[in-house]
Image (cartoon, rainbow, N blue to C red; front, side, top):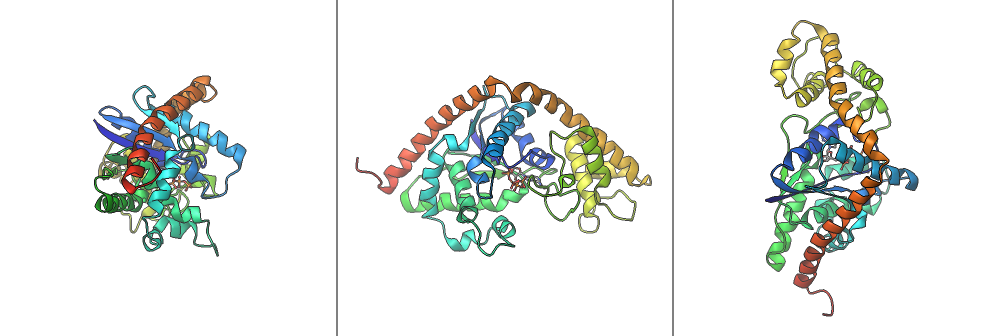
Amino acid sequence: MKRVFSGVQPTGNIHIGNYLGALKQFVELQEDHDCIYCIVDMHSITMPQDPKELKQHILDVAALYLSIGIDPKRSIVFVQSDVPGHAELSWILTCNAYTGELSRMTQFKQKSKDKESAPAGLFCYPVLMAADILLYDTDVVPVGNDQKQHIELTRDLAVRMNGKYGNMFVVPDGRFLKSGARVMALDDPTSKMSKSAPNAFSRISLLDTPEKIKKSIMKATTDSEGEVRFDIENKPGVSNLLNIYSAFSGRDVEDIAAQYAGSGYGAFKKDLVEITVDAVTPIQQKYEEIRQSQELLDILKDGAERAGAISEKTVKRVKDMIGFGAC
Ligand code: AQP
C-alpha cells in the first residue's frame, strides 16, 4: 500500500477550507492507503502562540480528526513534537536548502509582509514540512492548493539529497482536489480562508453553531449583479460560494448555478447554509463525545510510538548516509 502523510496546524478551529481542501481526502485515502496524520504543533510556533491555548488546540484538532472519520486503528494519528525525528531531519534538510529558494515561498512573503524582521522559523517552515513528509517515506500528500509550492520544494529537496547521497528519500506527490482545494475568505474572496484571520465571519469553523454559519454565509461578500454564475475573475465571491456548495454536495458548479438562475442570491445562500449545517452537525456530535475522553490521549500516545518507530529508521538511514556519528 502507498504511504500517505499530511498534517494540520493547531492554530485555531479547523475551518471548512481545511476540511474541504485536505481533511476530507484524509478520510477517503484510509480505504486503500497506509495513512499517517499529524498535528503539526512545531509549525504553529512560527507565529506567536499562547501555551495554554496551544495545548487545547492540539487536542481540538486531534478530536476533530477522529470526528470526521479518521480511524486510529487504520491510520496513525500523533502530535509532531512527540516524535524527535521531525526536528532532526529538518536540520539536515535546512543545511541542504538555499535561502534563495526559501525566500521565493509565497506563504513566507505573505506572513512576513508587514514585518521589519520575521522569525527564522517562519522562513524555514517549508523545510520542516519537507522533513515531516520525507521522514515517513511518503508517496502521497493530500493538501490544499496553498501548499503546492511547499510540495514542490519537498520534491526538489528529496531529488537533491538522492543525487548527493544515493537513494535516500521517496519523492512524494501532492494530491489536490478539484473543488475545495482553495476555499476563499467569506469577507474577502481574494484571500484564502484562514484560521488566524481576525474576522471570525471570514471563515466557517467545523465547530460553529448553525446561527454563526447562517450569519457568515448571509454576510458573505458577493456582488451587485444578482446572478449565480461561476466566474472567478469577475465574480470571486459568488464563485467561492459555488465552490463550497459543490464540494459539500458533490454537484458540479454549472449544475448548481443553473438551479438558481434568475432567483438572486437569497435562495442560493439559504440552501448553502442548510447544506453546510447538515455537513458539520454529525462531526460536532462525535466531537462532543471524543474531546474530553481519555481515549483521545491514549490514541495520541500510541500514534507517537508507531510514528516514532517508523521515523527512527529513516533518521538512522539518513545519518548513516551523510556520515554522522562515531559508530
Ligand atoms: N482556504 C483553504 N482552502 C483549502 N485548503 C486549505 N488549507 C488551508 N487553508 C485552506 C489546507 O488545510 C490544511 C491544513 O492547513 P494548516 O493548518 O497546515 O495551515 P494553513 O495552510 O496555514 O491554514 P490556515 O487555516 O490558513 O491556518 P493559519 O491561519 O494558521 O495560517 C493544508 O493542507 C492546507 O493546504
